[in-house]
Amino acid sequence: MTQRFCKVCRGWHDLDLPWPDNCRPEANMARSDLPTPRVISDRLDDVWNPVNGKKYDSKSAYYAAVKDAGYTIAGNDSSITKAHERAVETTAPAGLKDDLKAAWEQHT
Ligand SMILES: [Zn+2]
Image (cartoon, rainbow, N blue to C red):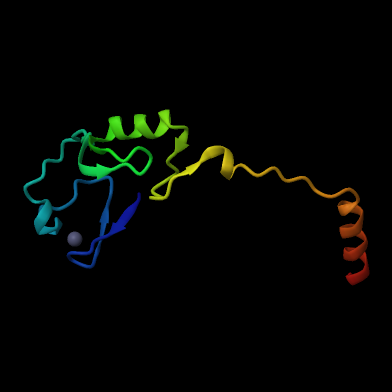
């Protein structure tokens, strides 16, 4: 039996049972219990693309223009950088492992 804390009545309710109607937040009363798909719109409000200076009202067109120019949008970061400029190869200097092992043994 799993229970969840109720923010409305400050008690605990069994999740195997339907959530009590009088414990639903006011904003969710009109919402159905049936699952509904979440729709993500393709719409943008005249977003300026710094890559080519054009404005876009479609996310897919904006992303395609950025990708065609060889750039990458990473996460929700608004800055755009070339993917090859971000990639940094790192290699450990020769003998680093032995130096670290020796330093560890000195201090333990
Ligand atoms: Zn409750």
